[in-house]
Length: 552
Image (cartoon, rainbow, N blue to C red; front, side, top):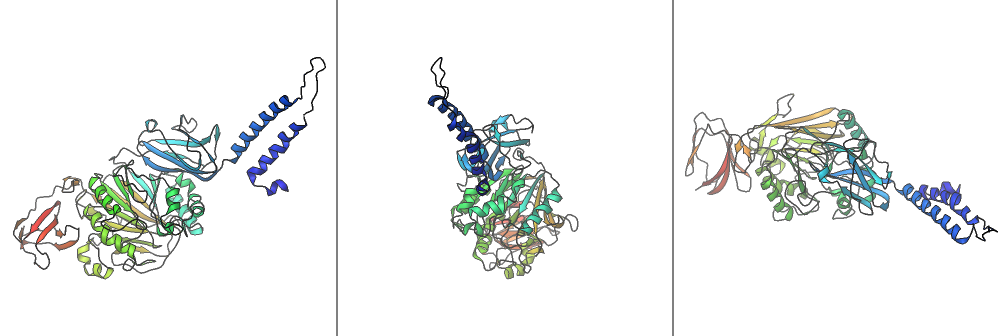
């Protein structure tokens, strides 16, 4: 009864002590009459006791080390991998890894002697696009983690490899819905390796406490996190217990120095990384400044200017377009991201954006310059919706871009927020597809010039999908490839523009801040009104041509 009432490890320790150590004190003292030596004397008993005490301590230490957060993968690149964990008592541990699961030939340096720790594996021992198995050890003792523990290093930056990512939206509420969404994806994926797990915030309900991170995130998703590099943005619920997101920042190990690609941000709240031919940008719509003069915005500007990747995907929590659990017309974080950040992102041709916050699925058309309220955007729908079809490759066909990276070439915004909770709502005018009261998650796949995004419900059924297809070409004003499409030209004389009489190509003019000012398909001579376009400098887009112009 006494042992049963003790904590498991202390119960075992007590049993070892009572069974093996305590009786040593009763070793009798005997004297050899011939030599006069005491075989059970004080020094002899001390020596025996020391041996048993050392064995006891080692046994107890081994017994005490169990994972309270099983190993999970962070900061993966073509030559980098970091393994993190939490154990029940502070200990320095090592990671053994190798390409043969039966022979983990490489051993990492020891971790810090902490409960929470990470080990970055030796980059000289890692090759691009290679599968490595790993286990965590306390000395010679392997700690029991997830059933499968492996990672696949990224391909070299710029490679056209098919890459697949699991998108989890507001997943941090443990329960039946979370389990069903997880298991539905597992059934559909059927064990195929993932290139990453991307979470768009609210990963630890309700308050973002340390205990909630363990019970609501790391425990239910342990198997996925053990085999795929995990990335996240912060949500509003991670900033309840601490307005700075202290438990969120302590839970993860994200890049701050540009070590996985991109420009150094100096913050784990917003950062970027490269994977194959994709540049991922993680933004903070909760804690950091959302102004155009803030550190986050200035960093984003530098990061967008620097990348030369084929695809750009951005992730943050508060959606720019939603009429479900949250209203993008009235809530400040949503308004700030739409009015301040979208013009910059679209200027540098971000292709897809993933958000959460509202607990449903809302996916827009291919949009550009829809920065106003929903009523304003609805009135300008013909100008801001670049393609009013579904983008579904199985029905009306994919969205097409005639350039790899042309400024204001169109962006799709996907709100995936129903991985653990549900909201009801109405349809935002910029949204093409919406599913309320449908638990689910997303799958993002990129292969060369094709990006495919799917919404998967908790049964593993595809409910919605869109695809963007690009055409490769030469270089435009942003320093990235664009399609060489100059067969149809235009000329400018003062405020007057001259186009081919058979022109079918849209001519768009943008403010230097990225706002769409004019969208026409002009034929012959065209002259914009001074009220529409006052004198000044602008950007233009005409087919595959991009540039700057001045209107007197």
